[in-house]
Image (cartoon, rainbow, N blue to C red; front, top):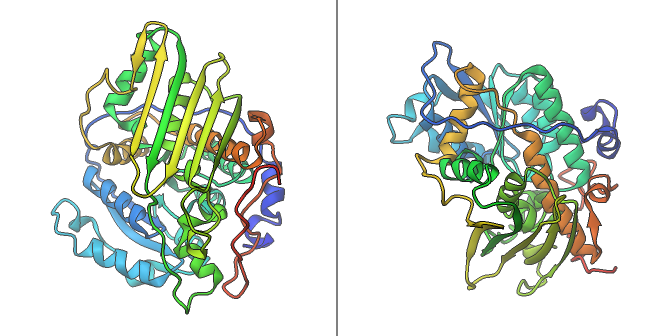
Amino acid sequence: MNKEQRGGMTRREFAKASAVTGFAILTAKSGLAEDNSDTLKIGLIGCGGRGGGAVLNCLQGNDNVKIVALADVFEDRIKSKRSEMENHKSPRIKPKVDIKDDMCFTGLDAYKKLLETDVDVVIHATPPYARPMHITAAVAAGKHIFVEKPIAVDPAGVRIFIDAVNKAKEKGLSFVTGTQRRHQRAYIETIQRIHDGEIGEVLSARAYWNGTLPFCHERDPKWGDLEYRLRNWYNYIWTCGDNIVEQHIHNLDIINWVMNAHPVKVTASGGRAWKPREEKYGDLWDNFSCDFEYPNGAHMYSFSRHWNDSANAVFEEVTGTKGKSNCRDMGKDSGDPMIQEHVDLVNSIRGTGPYLNTGIATAESTMTAIMGRMAAYTGKELTWDEAINADLSLVPDDLDWDKPYPVGPIPVPGT
């Protein structure tokens, strides 16, 4: 990416100019989207497993929608995802696939080409590093947006994203993020009862995502540095954000939702216990332990790791003066939340449901995770203001297939 792609500003300059303002309120609505004579045209940016899954979720849950455009850095991803969609066996999905050759775009600027088409809705599911600048472009193009979480990998990216979210709201664009628990009936009903005082004042919380490494690819000898970083993106800080940011955000988001706030400070630790020092494992840590403090003095203990052959645990828990909750035990589910989030988006676009712009909540949850990572990497207590305003930009200012992108050193606290 160059200055021309950002209207004459570098990524760092753009980030410094962006203000952290506003907070969007999410309202969920159950049921399939109502029929409408105008078919919404969908474009997918990022044709990996999550992007393809998000499109299928949208097509499954909504009528009068169709997928018409695909964009990805790599041509093989386009071909694979297009074939998968066009040959889908579900009668609910296959008729909604209408992808022409001239609506398939590849390369580092593929997202721009897609945004120049007449798609109404963009589903964005690239690796996290690209989201701030891509979403800024999508808002400028006047598209309604579904974007996966997390929304950035560093404070600079969070500030860029927040600026885009606020511009989307000014334009009346519907904007939904991939924190699907906020569209899950059991969570919605339970957290409402917590807000209504069911367990009293919340005194403490726990949030865990303990699992195994999602994927790790060997390097093909014909791949240059950039291609390998993007194909093996889950293993590098600048493409992924580390596991606390990419996965654990789901649990952190729930506690922020319960607390109606983001943390004000954090102390953290962690490290790299089992991953060998090999290029394919990148520069990520494999475990984090964080103690977050909220404005009311309540503390959340956050524990996340990627350890193979270890006990898995993924949950949230809050304790109040009158009881305890796992944040979904006082409600009843009524469908797949990964479908429901797309139903809610389409209902927002069509006006058959409440207007949605959930970007600020997800930006704050992303920043909560980044804040924990920053505190762990440095070994220092960190406040929210210090973290969100930090002059930290991890993503290279330009991406070029021929340039070297060496793996960074594994972070060591105190250095």
